[in-house]
Image (cartoon, rainbow, N blue to C red):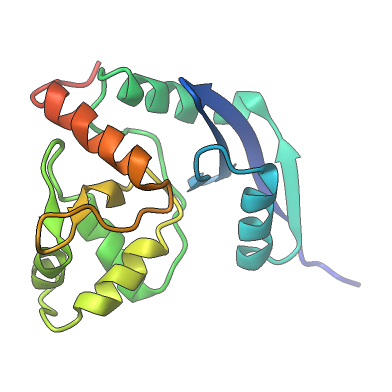
Length: 178
């Protein structure tokens, strides 16, 4: 008899301005924020790669707390997030994603600065790879990382969105959460 339980992942979508996002969460917290205007297939494929015995369930109510905070962020009313996150990755990725959460709202760091933060200054490329694997856009602020020359670099959400998020944070610097 097979006693392996299905991994339940709830999903929903939300629209902000001209962007539509798919979100996914487990019972432990938000686990994925999709790229803007990508199809449901993106979240479905991501979840299939991460979870065995996957059961994807559409549940707008389960995702509502996450959507509310993301909308507040987009409206310039929120500088950080209070919802739980269930972010899966290697210990190195976890270390990088934790470092991203240390970048203050409205500021940018370079890949080199992140490598120095984790005391691995020669691991700049590995840092970039881990940042690129961040499954929770916006909430884990990989958009705050720029190239050493100050230029915007790759972002799963697209450079247009990265620029938008950085400008939003610069304009709203100093806000406090509701």
